[in-house]
Length: 281
Length: 296
Ligand SMILES: Nc1ncnc2c1ncn2[C@@H]1O[C@H](COP(=O)(O)OP(=O)(O)O)[C@@H](O)[C@H]1O
Ligand SMILES: [Mg+2]
Image (tube, rainbow over all chains, first blue to last red; front, side, top):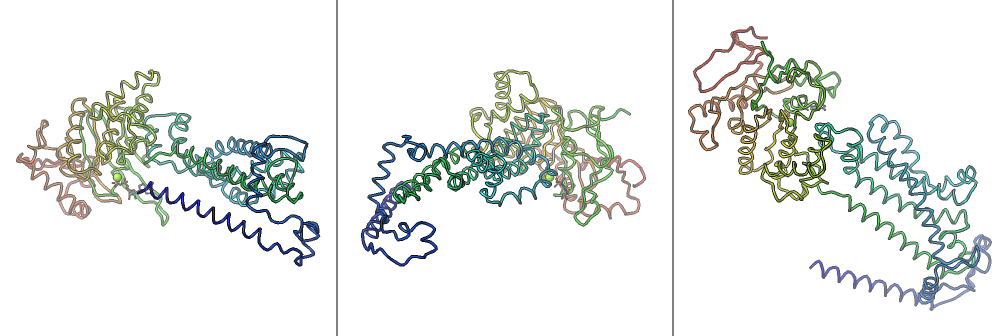
């Protein structure tokens, strides 16, 4: 029964995809009535040609399919600063995310441990964390550019900042809510504080910590695209922005699909890791 | 007078009350246990039994008074005192063997991994769990989990076992089997046991002494019942002993009525009760008068 529902869901997914592609194809190849009235403000912003849409009509699924094939058959070429393969651009973005995220892990997990172990520190730091958490990470960008004076490092910093809070909060919460029973087991066995941290608190809090990491990596991947659009240079965000300036909508749609796929893979990796450390009670 | 092996000397425990001030769970509590004794504590929920056990374990501290064990005041938990938790307290990410080995390696820190495992396997075999070593707690039944808890406690070869309603979550059949096993193991190893229970028959079957605690707040040890049944009793013979029903009725009568109205009982003229030496009674035996001390 479960098998058949899986199969049926897959069939339905394919049908939905086919309907969507067909509708897209028909919509694009149908009425191409150009020359509509255009908001002059908008025209000034993007350039007259782009605004009327006359020269670059919305691509259809076949155009995008061709573009994807072109990108994927040669993803790693470098022909100058503004012309690099999409694989290279994704690589830059991934490297920034992993670096910023990695530094955030190295800070958030030990710090969250200390916060979680002490109810006093927990309470004292809570207002700061609550204020910092809802700040859009991009709001840090000017400050980062001003102090760090390097656009690439600044985007790494922004990734660091946005990855920090979910992990910090989850680690502190996970550590603070380790079952009293388990801590008492360690106490009655006269287990020292360091051994207790690694043999009781860490495994007990690991699922919560990993869940925080999963949230963080998701946010980081969302933020890197925007950050790279802002600072430019390299990365998939910059690629999207660059193709917008080139009015290459097929490339933009290709990039959007790839961003989604990479984000999904990152999320799945963390989900897998979370499942590894989760224990049934 | 020589001091007893375990001597609870005038302990009190107070918690901050929600409406300010402090609630006294119990105060000026005195009680002594000898080496090798099996003591069961009976009293209603919330009277402070777990609190006393936690103080004995060193997990909690009395607000006043002290507990002296073998001549030394308790300062924190010790590997000499094993605790069997009501909710078994197994680490769910470790296997059965992992849980027991954790205790063994905590006690003998210089042992090799192989030696630790061998010792742990022996403890697991003692409680009849051979074959389940590699299972996680979530894969075990309630009775098996409690067995692992017992194996873990036994594995560190403690001098004292502290058990907090260890069998209350089990079905009657499993409970009976485990009672037999625990009784056998504790008698063989000469364990000193302090056990909390809700089950009158469990107390009668297992205990040498049964401590009757009144309802809280300000709970007291009303009486200590010396079990008149022979030490080598068997589960199926217990209820045939002439002292069984008087004993059982005495405890049930306490739980149903006297635990609540003990203060009024004390106020009756001529009632003699000393909190430093609660009367030791033996229902079903010819009456022994309680020591003649002024009521406090
Ligand atoms: N940490 C605590 N703070 C406040 N009150 C507590 C705390 N722990 C226990 N108590 C109170 O102490 C009383 C005795 O609790 P406990 O020893 O667990 O009772 P028992 O084990 O006999 O059921 C209860 O009324 C409980 O509400
Ligand atoms: Mg209790």
